[in-house]
Length: 324
Image (spheres, rainbow, N blue to C red):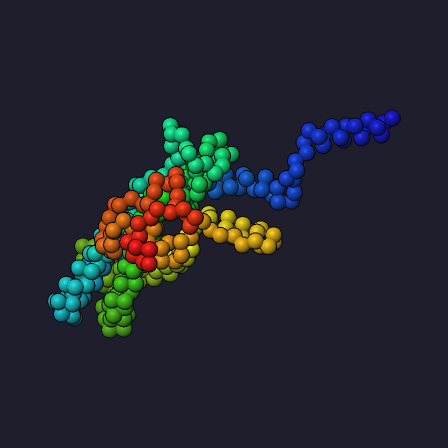
């Protein structure tokens, strides 16, 4: 009798708490949630500090380039060469500042709450609201973001549909700028290490910071930024080349594996081919040319982030390529 009651109690318990998705992965995901919460909360708190840090480091590197580099080239090189380098440096600086500011202050795009969505791929289980295609939830911002790529703590902002291009171009011009300073600052660094004798004498009036300290500071941060940001730039370039975001890269990889087990081939509906993927991402459609990339531009990306052109149905007016 006792055994029957225990069996009945066991059946009742399993009926109430049974979960068909229960597995080791399910348990791990449940237990790891507090850690995710801590990381998300920390990221949201330190975001503004990261923005200030990026601003300070960038401005200090630019300042040293003008304070030390320009006088060196005026002393040892021709005025024409120095003028050309200064103008090119100002061009890079303008693009770095513009694209960083736009990526920082531009909303990545949010699904409208007062508009009936005609195309909805799913319902966000955290927002409990419709999710348009390519939209994903940011746990740091606690909101859904159109064509979300990732949350960037250095921007204190999500990278999504309306600011993804600014984010990528900021990285591109920043890496080019670092390479520019490394290439034309190598001679200054060599001269400071091997040729100058009084390199430890502080510069008067500049908080007693020596010329050599400033050059080493400049060399360290430009090299570090070139390597770290350069690697991130290549990763995002690879994603853009394939017509996907960071989030979609994981989803597409899972779908490719799942369909392969069924003997099918997964097709990314947003992959128009390498060149056309770049045209779309940079907004080089509807007659826009390269000047919209080489010069600061606030042109909007194609579509509104709610509906998308696909390889199955597209109304894009290509500026370049065989379909232009």
